[in-house]
Image (tube, rainbow, N blue to C red; front, top):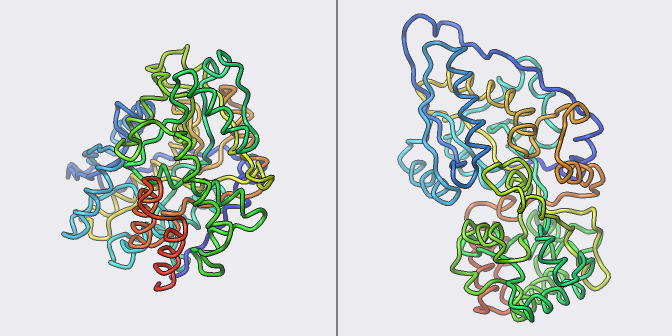
Length: 434
């Protein structure tokens, strides 16, 4: 199956063609008759780790129920990894929720192949909803030109850092890998954990590898080329990226025991000032801007910088990222019409609220100039506006089986259990078989 990808132009379009998403009541005819119907909705934004997301989701649900008498939304909330495991189990027994969250591209392909996700083309055609999305985002959730998911987020990853720690030791934002290593050395000399990393959830380590490959590949998107088979995983840049990553590990750049830590644990270390740096995507922006449960002193102390150049190579305006999670409707739902009405309502309401109340970048266009936004948020928007390329996360690009091999190899590479040569060879053999 062909999955369309159009990320290199997303960033420019985000600001240059912003529109205010029109709200709609999303009312479903016939549901005011007294026949109550329940739509089961499962999402991955718990109150503890994603407080603003959780709050806005509940507000949207309340508004939808108020405007659609006779439809009740039954919610289940799980953490990211718990969600992935439960969806996997549910798919084997054909018991998916009526509405749930999915990732794009290769992740969703087996669900579509298995007839588990409903086409959402009818939703996109209603009220010209397709025009509300940033160019390239719905394409990432389409297979054979049919949309099976509607995106909610647009992300880029950067290295966030604690400015108070940097200032205390006279450190500056590094622009090269050599400067980065010098920062790491200074932090270690002063008993400070350099980088928070929870590589038990190996997608976190994958971002480090992807950025090294991105920088070493120059203008060529060597990683994407290797995955879509227009190139090879044995490209010299991909091998060197694995070598550079192990060099970072050997230099004790990451917190002790990183392969046994979950991302949530690493996040807590950074937010409690127990580590100076943390590579994460813009879905975490609320914790540094709008989340009032996070002390203002810490939020004021967070800065970020683009991933450094490696051996003089790399475009600072080339990012690892892409659309985040999106909503799907179960093909086997007994309340499919109501589920689709809820999804349509949700994405229309989500756009501006995601910016003003959550503090993330939505996949729908908004009128950014009319909004009062935190400085950090505005800086990220400017980065998106100037982005030359956005490479989609590797595990999302790959099929589910290849992605699992990739994540297993990432953990093994970080753990020193395999050589860089074995890392690229295993990837090449896995992808070649597909």
